[in-house]
Length: 320
Image (tube, rainbow, N blue to C red; front, side, top):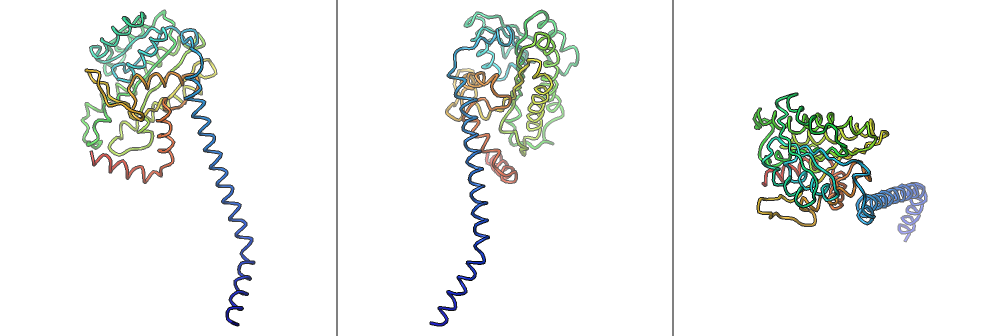
C-alpha cells in the first residue's frame, strides 16, 4: 500500500512539473491546425475564384479586351489546336505557326468554315535561324495582335524509357528550337505591337507533371521551367503596361487521334474541354493549370517531398 501511495505521489509531482510543457505543446498543435485550416480555406477560395466563377460570368468580348488576332506557336500540338478553335469561337482570327503546316491545315480549314474567321498558316523552322522570322513578321504586320500562345512540344513525354544521354544530338537541337527558341522569338516579334496598343495576352503552355525535376524527362522539365519563369519575368516587366501574361501547367490531356477518338475523363480531359476551361482563366490567374481537377493534382504534387516524387517517378517510368 505504501508503494502504491509513493507511486501516485511521484506521478502527481511529474505531472505537475510537466504541465507547462504539455500546455506549450497544445498551443503549438493548435497553431499548426489553424494554419493548415487557413491554407485549406485559401486553396478552396482560390479554386472557386480561378475556375468556377469565371465560367459563370457573362460572355466576354475577347477581341475588345485583348485584340483581334492571335499568334499561335507550336500549332501542331493538340492543346494548341484546341485553344485556337476556342479563340476562333470568340471571333478571334488566328495565325498558326508550325514546322509542318500539313499537320494544321485541317484545323485552319475547320476554323474558317465553322467560325467564319481568318486563319493564316505559316511554316517556320527555327533551326534555320533569322530566316524563320521573316514570314512571321510579314504576317503580323499591320494586324491588331491580341494574343501570343506558345505551346510546349510534348513529344518528349513519350520517351519515358530513354535517359537523357540516349537522346540524339539532332533530337535535342530540334526540341530546343521548337520550344525555347520558337517561344522566345515569336514573343519577341509579336509583343511590341501589343505593348504599343496597351493590351494583349501572352499564354505559355507547358506541362504540370514536369513542374518538378523528373527523371528521364530532364529536357522536358527544363523546357517547362523555362516557359514558367519566362512567363513570370514577362509579367513583372510588362504587366503594368496592359499585357496579361499567363503560365499554363496542365497535367495529362487525352490524345486526339485522327479518327477523333481518345481516352478522356474527369482527370484526363479532351483538348477541347481543357481549352475551354483554360481560356476562362485568362485575365484571372497568372499561373494555373487551367483546369480545376489538375489544380488539385498540382497542389498534391507540391506537397509531396522531393525524394518521394523522384522515387515515384522512377517506379512509374520503369513500370511503363
